[in-house]
Length: 309
Image 1 (cartoon, rainbow, N blue to C red):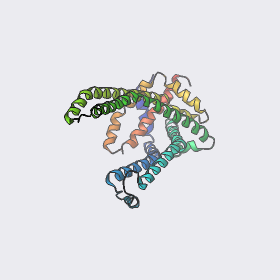
Image 2 (image 1 turned 120 degrees about the vertical axis):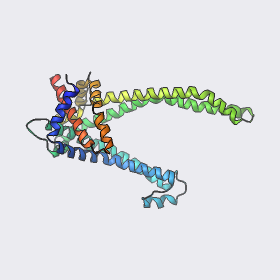
Image 3 (image 1 turned 90 degrees about the horizontal axis):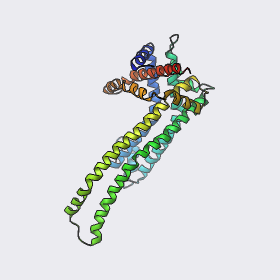
Image 4 (image 1 turned 45 degrees about the vertical axis):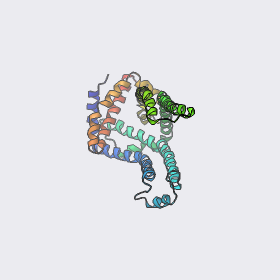
């Protein structure tokens, strides 16, 4: 059974022999992956500036368009921005399925190839998923993984139903408290209402905080479990592009059974590097990301050996 120290030592030994190529591959992968999400973020910033300041700053074309339409909420400009945001969301989903997911498999392929002693992986392996005979199987496998990840994220969202009920209950209680005075025909003193609210607020606040924390913990546990269940899918498809969508996910779940906790600990062991990377505005992540992915490749090969796959 592998240990984090052994895995990280092997990973650094392998990635260091082609570190700059790994950095270049990572940079290109990040730029392509972040293009569509970056577009959505820009539109979100424009919307916020439109709603709170009423102007678009350097976006002069939209500034004039919005300024002449009156209220900032529901203007033609906001409608245009909402449509653009929806379009970018659709494009981001399509790009994830048809471009970014296959690139993830190519990224994994680079590390699987680079770990072999007799060869150094080339940059073009990043795009190996798009070769004829490979793309269809990889597309199906990664799309199947994305579908199940999205479904499980909906399940994780159910963890917040109790806290939502408490929140609605708090609002209803306030409405009832105010309505009691309004229905009695007696003028309501502001201090009386405040005292009434103060008497019911502590219970709702405590319940809200407890249920919120439990909801976050539950959702986090569900998403982590699914993340590590599908952890090896891209490596499996990198080695076997025609393996089949369901087969790839089932094999990944079988390989990660009983070791999700160890994978979580392995990720935690890199937290110092990621914190240091944040101090360099993410520049160091171009070296940390190849290091971590090389470790994942080592775990995958180790697990294959253990299970004689």
